[in-house]
Image (cartoon, rainbow, N blue to C red; front, side, top):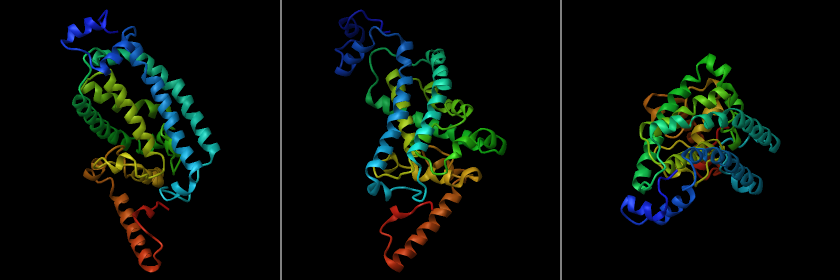
Length: 299
């Protein structure tokens, strides 16, 4: 809760007039506790894990001809029923495991110093902190993911997530409850190391959820993060990990590709891609049936 009785008091405290965004923040948060503000991440995650996959599913249903050229594994079709069944499983885990954990985790957020007060952070502060969060998340997640492919851990926990060899948006959080909790640690590690404002924290949670869903859509669309951010992984990169399945020792990183390159866990992916590119080149020479690199698929 903001420690100001009025907007004028807030402006005196920070020594300048409030910006329009700060005015909105003041009006919205003046009578809300920090705990309530933190708990905004619950409906945020729920809405994003529902609406973002639904957006991709609707595109697939409404524009099948358009999306066909972007599908990474075109031979595999996930039915509407399987999408719905997967969503119900994900929501059960969300409400039975994730929500209770989030409700009791506020003291850790308070302890690391996530603030809700004015002034709001500058755009440069938000961007720099988000970059740090993404790098920390990616590096930590990489090693946890590799550990989850150890035989016992995979067979007893991680195998649930690999049920879909060609993932779709709703399968993003389709995992064993232990995996859901463990993979949540990297998302909180960045804010713990470099604490910022609650707005930055909520924006980070939103971007991470959107990026994660995007990686599991099974479509390499031209508007994705991969097209605009250097070293980004993307759906095509992560699809290979699911395509190989339980035997996969490749493409563990969730966001960027540099960890897999440095530690040599993308060799299978790069070999497979070179092979497919060669087949593409030979096919284009023989009958002109391939127009671009977009036609490379994990058959």
